[in-house]
Every structure is written in C-alpha cells, then in structure tokens.
Length: 446
Image 1: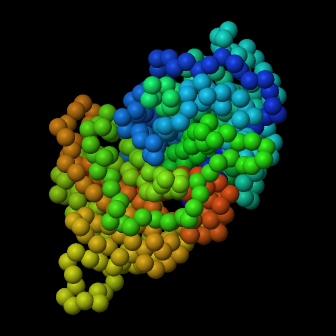
Image 2: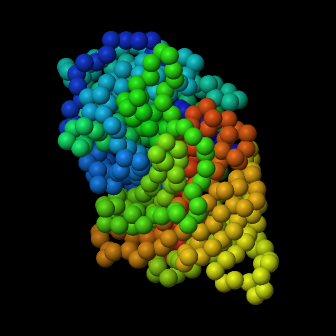
Image 3: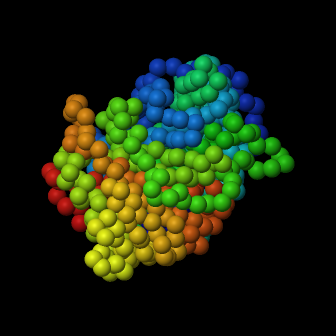
C-alpha cells in the first residue's frame, strides 16, 4: 500500500490549471532568502537554503534533494528539490506565475478554476489567485483549493482547503551560467492525511513514508516546470518527457562517491541528501542517497554489506541466503531470495550480490529483473558543528518499479517523471531505515 500512496501523491502538485488569464509581466528577480516553509518541530524540517547553495552540487543531468535531518521525520516534513533549468529566471518565472502553463507542464487535472482574487503582498507582485482544483488518479478523484502568490523572489502555492491541506509549496530561483540557466529550488510541505483514508494509511505505514511521498511529488513538479521552460508545450503535442527504453545500469557502474565529497558537505550538514541521475534521453539512471552515521566506517560497512540487514528496507519481509553452486562458495559473491510484504507491487526477487569490495546487487529472477543496488561507505571528514561524524554511507538504486506491478507500470506510462520520483522515494526510505538502525545511540527501529 505504501507504493500506491507514493504513486498517487506524485501528481498532487499539478493542481494549478485554470482557464488562460493575463500573465503577470513583472519579471522574477532573485532576492535574498528569508522565511521558512510552514512550521515544523525541531529536527523535522530543514533550514531554508538559498538556490545558490545547490549550485556546485548540481549538474545538467542531476537533481539534488534535501531531506530532514531527523532519522524519523515528524508530520508534515519539509523536502527541498533543486534542479538546473536551461532558461533564464524570467522564463522560469513566466511559467510559475501563469496558471495555464502549469496545465501544459502537468496535464493531470480534470478541473481547476480561479475562483477568487485578492491584492498581492506588494504593489508589483500582482494579485493572489485562489485556485479550485480536481485531480483524477486511479480509484478516486481529489479536490482542494490553493492560493497562487508572488512573494518577492518566490512563487508560492498555499493549500488551504481539501486534499493535502494545510500545505505549502515554494519556488525560488537563482541565475546560473551567467544568466543563461536557472537554479530552481522547490520546497514542499503537505498534509497527506487530509486527502482520504488511503493516504492516512500510507502515512502510517512506516516513519519515512510521508517524507518519501512529499519528495516524490516535489520532484515531479520541479522537473515538469523545468521541461516546460526548456521545451514549451503547444496545442499540437503534449509536454516533452523522457523517452527511450526503461532500463537499469549495471550494478558495477553505480557510484555515489560525489555525495561524500566536500561539494556536498554543507548540504549533508543540513539533512539527508540524495542525487537523482538522468540518462541523456532523460530516463532515470539511478538515485544515490547519503546518510551520516556516528559509527566507525568499518562497522558501518560490515553492516550494510550483509544482505540480512536489508530486511530493514520498508517492504522487505525476509532475506534468505541461497546455496552456492560452487564449492567452496566464493567469498565475494552471494545469492539471496527476498520476500516482500507490500500490496499492489511485486518485489519478490532473487538477487545476486558481488563484493568489489562493497555490496553491489542485481535482481536475476523476479518481476523487477534487472533492478540494482549498491552500498558505499566513506570516512567522514573532521566533525563540524551539528554534523554526525564517523561514516558516510551511500545507497544507490535503480529499483525498476515500472516492472513491479500494474499500478506502477501504468502510472509511469502516463507520467514518465514518476520513474524518477518512485526511485527517489524508495531509495530514501531504504537508506533512512538503515541509518535509523545504524546509529548506536538510537534504539532499534523494529
């Protein structure tokens, strides 16, 4: 059921379609950062980050995601997604400020209308518009209302009624490459429990489900806006989307080394960090998530390299080692059978694990054949204030959820960006669950 909830929530941020309205002509001018998205208890959110903070970490084919620092985030966590857009800040602002462009970017709505307006916070910001929306997803529709607001350098969606309210999504921009491109930062905080009983059940599934759902939705929205800027939709075709076959890379090529580098040091201090890698045609390459652990690297490595520990992954019910065809069995290889306990998807699989020297695993039998994962462990640098020193463990995955069941396959077919979002949600949840157990000063999570 958790995977169904993630799938459904991915498109909630598309709730901004209206009939065409006169665009706000005031260009976006990046200003100093101020304020926070929503209110969270200490440790449940992340301190606001300037778009420029992500500049060195971003590349043209990656997105960077910042999760809460807390091992088990509280309700309504804040998740931040940063992506590089090949367009000027004014071009990005034109999409964010024009409700009809959201519909072009994310064609997932059956109804959305401007039902009220009010003066903006400043004279040059333009009016605030209240959007009544209805979103169609498998099994049911969702409805709500949200204010679309220009606030200094930010464009904000404030969910005030119906599904996912109260909630807040804020977009911030910064020029890059001499103004030829833009760093777009999307901060999201929603209330999935207000949607319906399915979302409430999903949010209770494990301590990481709500954060994973929020991250998935924020990533789809951020990339959809970026693609609408880079390749504007017109009446003769739909929005540009990743193309080509869906496939995972060889497990040996998974590499999260850069997440442990000094380039990511300030972001690691602010929370858990993930990088979503894209192929040249826009498909998911893989997702890497880094967690800082207050334990010796050798101890962390021994734990994450043992397949039995992967039963901590949400959805993995059991892991059983299978006998080797070689005698004696090779010390750098293993084969395991995994049984899942998740509704609507099939994660039962046989994995082959190779150590070179850390664990790299590939599904060789099962619905998700070809799925891969890898662990890497790095010594942490000298501890900085508020940094969890010791080791940096990086989990990289391409889970092939497009092959995990009917619901996931159909949702990815309808919205190819969901391949990336689901991979992000799953990799985060798996890494966070492992980190929760690895910290020696925490009680076991299960």
